[in-house]
Length: 252
Image (cartoon, rainbow, N blue to C red):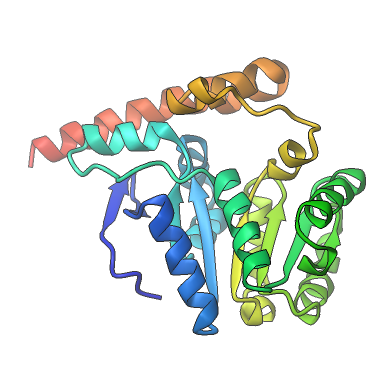
């Protein structure tokens, strides 16, 4: 799929330089034209993961849209001299796409998180919009041997949109491994821990922290033992590699 927009190279990951509204419009147009669109959003941590995970690298590379879901990427793009238009936050994108689905009578499939969490998300969207919005749902606990049957269940549901809320890189790799089975689902994206936030299980950072690129720090404060390596070590490595990219280019 050719979005017609330029791309920004950050540590060899090509990110689509599209705004939030442009992203929504591309997806809606794709559904209207019965296209198959896979979107991946990346942040500093995922770009570092890509460096050591060949399958994740392929999963991201085949995506039709790659969004910058992290203010650190916007800052890095400015530092590298090719600025991104803005951050496109995955949870905000999902929220707007669910509303778009309701307004246009599309159906969504919710896949991921714990059973009680995904059920709560189904309940919230059913009350906010309409229960007919939900084509199906499933928790995110499964064996690798179950992948194909889950993908078929999603396809058979008739959903136009699929939201996969599983930890990266498993969500990207699920969509990559089952891309042929899922090709009739018009739009697919991984949304990480978004179901936890929507259900109220996890709190999102205050708006001022979101705007100043501090969501990662708020998340770290909630689960320091689990998140310290991902954020503190990963972010430090990201900063180092961005500086390396900047000054390697300046020597050319």
